[in-house]
Structures are given as structure tokens and as C-alpha cells.
Image 1 (tube, rainbow, N blue to C red):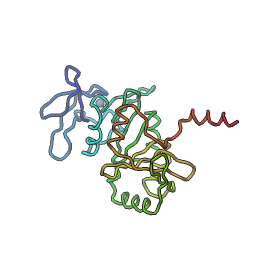
Image 2: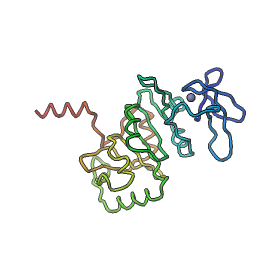
Image 3: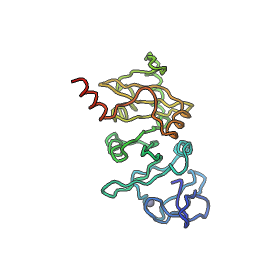
Image 4: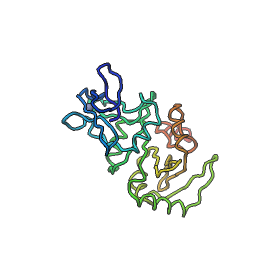
Length: 231
Ligand SMILES: [Zn+2]
């Protein structure tokens, strides 16, 4: 983790010889400051208290550091007392999770339920074939302009990443490096709607508590309202 708590309950970063406790479980943490991994805090002599926690990469850190520090690594418990630490949690309760390693779709669904309002940012650079598949898919598609945004309508199983993430019903950002993320913000039957969106704008909107523009998954309540209006 990037942060531990000092004796004065301040959030402190890992530096050689520093001492701190876990903001989630209160356990003593060791500052790991080597040359291979990003400097981080580890639970002393035992596993992480959040079994969902993923070892941090530079990619995680670079994303998290776009947001203010007190929104980073926010502990949350569900009614059963289960503890998880959100990568980013805004004051309105929106969670942004950055996923680098492989994860099964049912596991993503479970975590999404836990967090409630969550946007997933997926590292598209982990498997080299993902970028190739994505570029091929976009090259064989003509985007349609809608409200000033070029939207690609693609088949829901066209790439491996879409097979894994495309049916979650949540906003997903695929990060293949560069200035933009490829946002999946809406789905209908077997179609998935993608558009490129600047990372800086994504960070700005989330930081300001504003919704992502144009194409959005409808909230279940709004769908219900719309259905009633039609009757
Ligand atoms: Zn802990």
C-alpha cells in the first residue's frame, strides 16, 4: 500500500526505516523500499488484511496519484464486517478500481456489488494480444458521431477483454497507454459502445464529482421510471 498511519494517525508513505500501521486493520506494517517494486507498506509477517488487494505496480501508482491523497486507499466494510480497501473513493462514494492482474468476471461482479458505485480501469498493456485485438476491432469499425463523441459499436465478444469485462454493466476504462482511455459506458443486447476519452478529462470529472459525458449505463431506477412512462 502507498499509505500507512503514523503514531499521530497521519497518512505516511513508505520510506526506509519508517514505522506505521494499516489504515484498514490496524496491524503493524513494514516499509518495503527496495529497487524492484515501488516503495510500499506491507503487513508485518502476514498476508494483507484485504484479500482482494493487488500488488501495486507503477501503473497503479501513476493512476492513483492523479487523485488527491485522502481519496486513495480508503478502507470500507460491508454489513458482514468484511474489509476492503478501495484504490480511489470519492466523498460521494464513487469507487475507482485499477486492475492490472488477471481476474475472473464473477470475481469482478462480486467486488462491484461490494463497492456499489464503481468504475473499473483495466490495464490493457498486460497481455500483448489485447492491444492487437483492440486495434483490429476498431480498424474494422466505423465510429458514429453522437453528441460530439465518436462511438464505436462492437460485438460483445469481439475481443478477449470485452469477453471478460463487457457484460459487467459498469463503466470500464481500458488503458492501452497514451493520452486516452477506451471507455465502455453502455451496452445493449450484443452491442457494446466504446469511445476514446482523455485520461486528464476523466480525472478532472471524477475529481469534480461530475458524471462522464454522453453515453451512460442507465441506473436501474431510471430504467424503471422510463418503463412506467411508456405504459
Ligand atoms: Zn491491514
